[in-house]
Image (cartoon, rainbow, N blue to C red; front, side, top):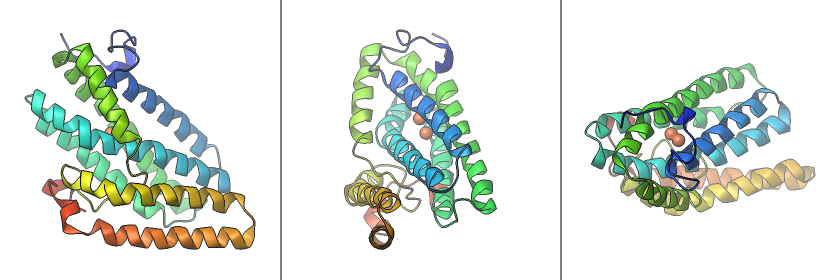
Length: 236
Ligand SMILES: [Fe+2]
Ligand SMILES: [Fe+2]
């Protein structure tokens, strides 16, 4: 079977609703909608849409790195080179997002940097939908694609939701990193959401707590075991 982009295929061709290929494409379309929402908004609405984007993009990519790319490296002759390219894209997105988080949401710098991130996200989707995943489709039975979809979903639903450029993009470092970082990230998401909803003094408290957790996460990221398995080209 010749590899064909996922974009033009039916769900049945991709292995059914639970296939990893369908699940990937579904998230990529949700990403598209979120990017449009961010482009058309400002202030708290833009900040909220950005949190939603992180909650979509980072667990999605984490589960690719932990579950999908190791399989691709095993089953495709050029799997190593293909997955390294997307890991480098993911790494750059992680690095730029940590800078983005320090900028004023409506400032020109924020808009300029976000445009770059948006380009990288779109390039990552094209690499996956047009090349990596179609190649995976040529060597895997639909049933195996559904099993992989299940494993990817499980990891995705418990993964970190924030950029972590310092930890490894590969096993075992990334899996170890998820244990402390995922609950910290998810608590920060709740605090940041609350800060946008509750009145002044409470909002300030939520922001302070979120910043304290960010500092803790920053210290944890540098623990040597969490950097194990890293390819030298994706080291922050
Ligand atoms: Fe993806
Ligand atoms: Fe990706």
